[in-house]
Amino acid sequence: MDSKLQIISGAYRGRRLRLPPDARPTQNRARIALFNMIESGIVDTSGDLMVWDAFAGSGAFGIECLSRYAGARVVFTDTSPTSIKTIRDNLATLAVGVRASVVQMDAIGAVNKYGAGANLIFVDPPYADENLGRAFVARLGKVATTGTVLIWEQEVGHQSAPDETMWDVLREKKYGRARFLILQKK
Image 1 (cartoon, rainbow, N blue to C red):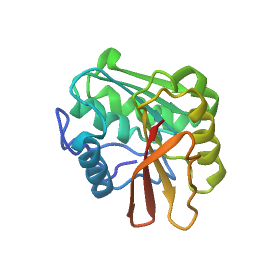
Image 2: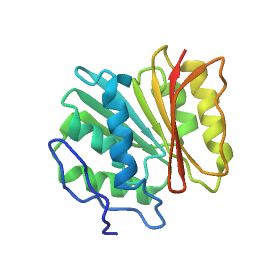
Image 3: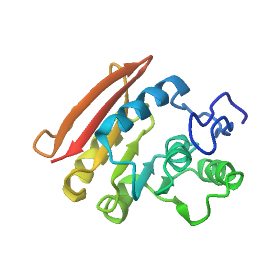
Image 4: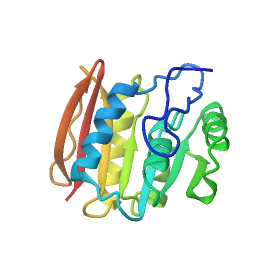
């Protein structure tokens, strides 16, 4: 499906991204604000960066990282075959090579595989299942390394808090119906 969703900055700036049917993409304005916060010193983006785009959907968060950060490698996970195809289609036009891998896998099931190695993790589970985000963040807290940054998108009105013994809340922002928590592993 064609959309107004596009890459905001970097080498692939302005490229439009396809969306899977029934997608609820994070709007460009919210992604701009999130990346401005990331680049304000929350994450060291100057060197190697391992990014995990869990519940990837269109892959917009991870693709934005590939566009902005030359040292970024991104793993995209999603359970939907349609989302996986959409991500692969979006990546095919960018020639990112080995910097990206796309895996059809449940994000919670993938925590042990990708959680400890990622510096930056985006989690944007379906709003219809608010428990999914909580379960993911709880499980990730057991394997993520100190300093790992997690961007957790939730629906306003269905907010969850992380376990504060495992995560520091660096920032909280609301954009429309989305609430973003920027967390750092203790």
